Length: 502
Ligand SMILES: [Zn+2]
Image (cartoon, rainbow, N blue to C red; front, top):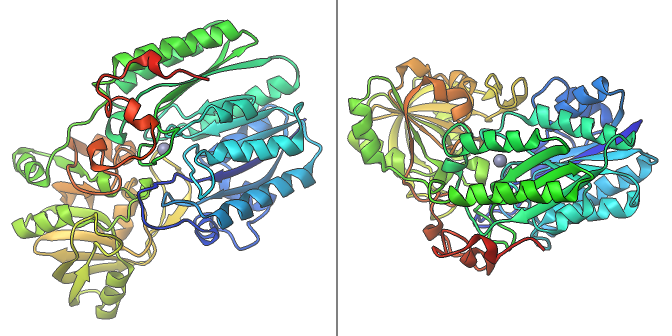
């Protein structure tokens, strides 16, 4: 059995001012301008907790000859340019066409990519691939839990499998599941029948977390429904709320073995249950001043999750609101990680370790993340920012923060990087020169993912009330798409039945 795999992943924050280009995909995929080949994909993803890592493991297990043709991602950022989309999708479609014939296709997509032409870019990718492989070749798509799914995508794919975790730690398992399902389809053992429903519901990162309630309990219920006789897989996509597009928000999917009534019934149950949880799914935010109070009273580590400036959701990662308050208070034991400011890193490198510099720090990308601070800083440590993920997310994968400086400013330490990277792994602090045991209040520019590797070391975790393009507060954004205004909580009197699947 010969199966082709491919992927283009991007989570698009339409409120971010930067555009996402071909160069961003090349840099963040660690590839050259030729976009790499099959062997590079195998080498990079083998034995990693990624979708392609799961494909490779599954292919070995189920006797599938897997041919990875292309796998590209860009770090979350603003709208993908037309040129980038046409270049990359053109390359993917050409490579798939060249690699035919195939018994099936696996697509590793995100689900929240927005381009200058397409609000649901994944639906367009699958539509184009469907047009070259034909109706008879099954296509199984995997998606991030933050996918904004329009009704078009389920029309072009035979089955959709979404992540079940946030922090995302089940990519390897979902990739494996996709190979298993596809191989059963090719052998004629199952006949997938998919039901899809969009809910009039918008949710925000802090409470989408599956380690906390109500999502932890909801996922248990989803797994119970998934294990019913005749059910193949079920997915909840919580949506990426920082995208002003018609298909934003929560949707649910169920795939059954040839039983459309069962798939519809599961989707109905999931939708009703989520609707009951809609108020619990709205976050409560805490200011940095409150966090300092909490930290003074706490025995152990307090984490202030500054999700408003989360680069993993397209924010600049250079916001200064929490940092400024900590410096003003001279809050010893506070660490801010990471703050992306390549210019500041260069100045620190010029002074060398042990040097003292005066420099403008942060808030240089736009005006939504505080003001640039003029600071006197001690250069405590310099590093190349190279690290390997040691925590559950992307474990084993190599990555870099670029040249990195640990600065000390009035008792506060700041990890300043030259590449935008969400601090989700303890190894990132380690290579920057921060020993977690020396930290009492840790400001992480991360909404939820940090919990995977830092959660067990924290006494208290707080969701930050700070400004930014990833702020978990719908009132901070002006949405122009019509559907958002019909959804809870922007429409407090929304009813579940008002907007149903097409
Ligand atoms: Zn996600």
